[in-house]
Length: 238
Image 1 (cartoon, one colour):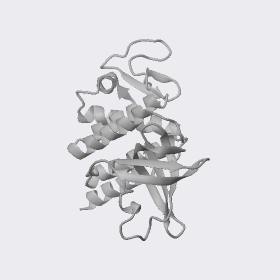
Image 2: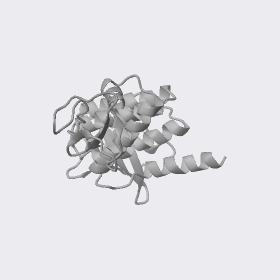
Image 3: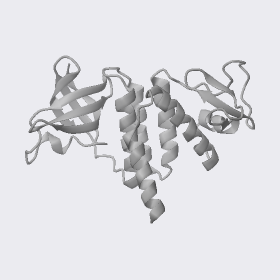
Image 4: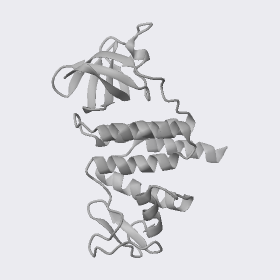
């Protein structure tokens, strides 16, 4: 229960009964919460109009258990304007948070990382960098931080021109032919320092992150990735 207004973003919403909405919400100090917004659908100027994705909000709620009831909501600032590919990237961020972030686990750093990612998606065309850095920060704040500077068994420091593989439950090891996807020490350095990215390192880092996140999702598919794939197929045909 939180009767005081707190900063929040709606991550996902769906209709509930005839006039209500079920919401997955990311809050600054209370983590992810599941709420029911009662009676908001169908009114000409209702709360439903502001319970949109990428809209900075102040909300309060009441109740016990996993599903609680929205009491009040108001906007803080204009909605982040994510268009085309950036909007799909936003859906991906939201889905990661819904599936990886436990309920009621207060993580202000995750809230701040999410807000910075929305700013980045709104301001830049280089959405891949925004996604990779958000994935890195999210994993770190969830306690799954990547050890990128040395091999997990030998402790040997990585070398830029060597090839490595990453096990989500262990760490880095020297890549062997026929083993998992390879990533160069150079690309690992780019991810560590969060700069100097190029297309090669972004491609390698994307494969690394996809593998690690797949592990922590328990193999569950992401719907937003399917949307990306469909969009790419459409673009290839036209």
